[in-house]
Image (cartoon, rainbow, N blue to C red; front, side):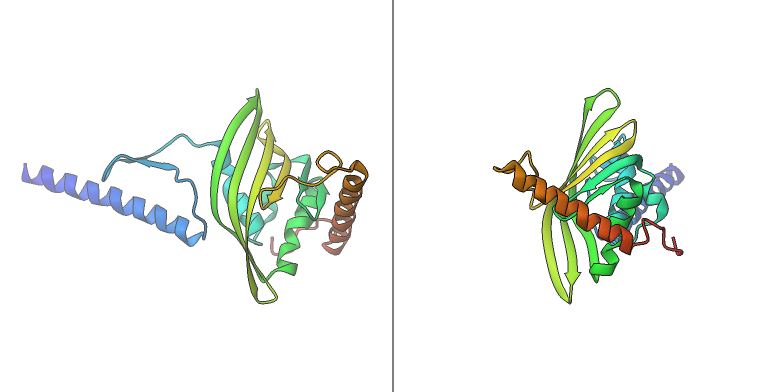
Length: 209
């Protein structure tokens, strides 16, 4: 009986240590996330069913953390789009240029907090909302920004990626009072993206990636 008690004690200790190790890995990643664990008391933690968002979130963190590798873009459909208030990228190569350029502009960039909401909007189609806080360092100055990342997924591939700064909808011909002004904004984002794309070697993966 005593040996059985000792055995259960060590099993409980191993479970606790494993869980703490898992949490430490998350802390080192620098982002506070929706835990994939559900706990109902000491030693009673188990992994819940993973969402599609859980499988792509490490890649999203790499993109915004200026440490993206070529494989991080495998989550996009070939003709996927990315849009924020400054740029509008069309196709994976332009999306690569958009995120590879972050390290050229900012001394630091990362998502520091986030909360995920995932919903099925049609068979084979999902919408993922990532309510997040981003940190940047520009010319030695720290910048904190809240954002809403909207991902539209079809057949387990991202087809559209929007980043709403300050959680405000992107300004275009459909969202501003004067459609002509919105169209000019759209053209400006496309123009800046084309310039960025050329500067970054037209989506070429850095040799270290």
